[in-house]
Length: 211
Image 1 (spheres, rainbow, N blue to C red):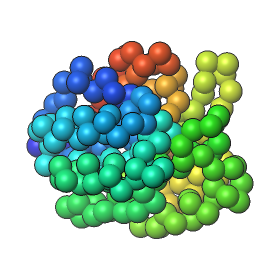
Image 2: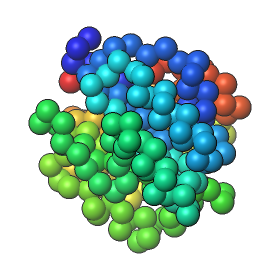
Image 3: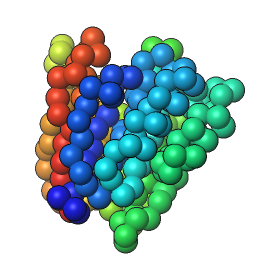
């Protein structure tokens, strides 16, 4: 599995219970923590640093408050000091793969990285380059692996428009715990990599993809 990519999201500080396979790149699509505290991030950083992957790429999620409040620099440094790549409306290229990551999602209660639907959130998606191969967002696009238990589709409409234009090979996300899985639309493979269910118990295994 040397060239395998493994994806996970919404580990909510229960990461120590996960046993990950060896691979090339590990992606985490946000909600590393449960309460968004800096000590949780330090714990996650130590865990990720021990995992058998050449590269680790991480974005934050709506629970990860310390990546948006006054502890932001310390939280980011906790990751980067362990060799973990942190993306926040930014990109990295690894072995020819162009990767973009963003923690933003449509407003959801009083959580971190909330943006109003429409023009406010669209500004973030407009930053995504047209030539990326892998897109990481915390929340899903509208209508794709974004259905909650009521059956309502809660993903972002503006994100869907941007993904349809960019057509990345992989679009990975989490946030909506009920819709874990993989779905291919056109040339894009969409991955909801949520590990936990709504009470933050581990329910799903990390998703492995060869690229």
